[in-house]
Length: 435
Image (cartoon, rainbow, N blue to C red; front, top):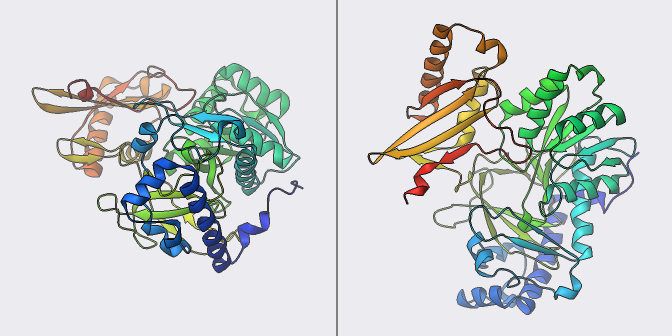
């Protein structure tokens, strides 16, 4: 049996009690931020809000939003609510679009974060009998440290392989009998491909995988499940809100339960900031109500999704978020049409293609060009030129039906697209060079 982790009974608490707990913690958190974060206090003052105006979650909408721009402006220490001497760790984003986001943790923050990851692991059936292979990156990236700590709390044997060195990954899987794999979905797909090439699938004992840190479709989930012979579960998190474990899938695989005793979720209209009712699609906003060192209030994630309190067969009562349908900042505008990479992946996998593809957007003579390179399987690569050409035309038509815009599809040789051991680079937008 799994060891008891932090207050698991809260996961099945009646909704009215969850909301009462959230209200109590929100009031305390707002006061904590007001007293210790001058940057956010100024934003509240500009909006004419004080802690006395926040009596519970019904007043959450009165607070100002925080965005990634705020985090960059306040970098590095401007949003800390605890002195450096009380903090024991930082984690950080990649910083590919500007200054790095640096999040700070007290030991209590780390304990709660690892508890959230323990919940994610137990939701997929992990116990102290399991061998958990954590193939997320370690270091500044939150994936490895979060699932590593969660696995320890469950009592599982933990293999901290980090990402990369695929031959060693597979050796540990076979030699140590790994039963649960934690990594990005694109790396899971690469591992599945490598396992098949080595002919060792019959030596793999995996039963489940927890995959996150990048967008992936249900079509990619089914492809990974079939190739690895596992159940593939989604996990969600942001460095800004601790890391993985903010929400996670249960056995239903139909949305991720948000750890509502630690986070309050809202859906807003991304254009107006208006709070939308349950069931409507919009931008996801999180408020951290138990973080000590880096407590963000009303943080705009830019992820687009839907929230639902539809009863779940697993018995958990915490609200679910659907798999994000894309990010407002991941959306490509090509010739005036909104395009999400997830739409392209859905079409490609439904058409029987591999999950290895790359989208290249450029600008020639003031007109956007839109090319998609897609790897062929080894079997397809052996087909005649006419068959390959016909498949390209079929993909062009299917993509146009989904997107409303025509792309040039290029079927390329197997293994010609660089594999990722972390987050896959799906989009190359060369237009940014000219902006």
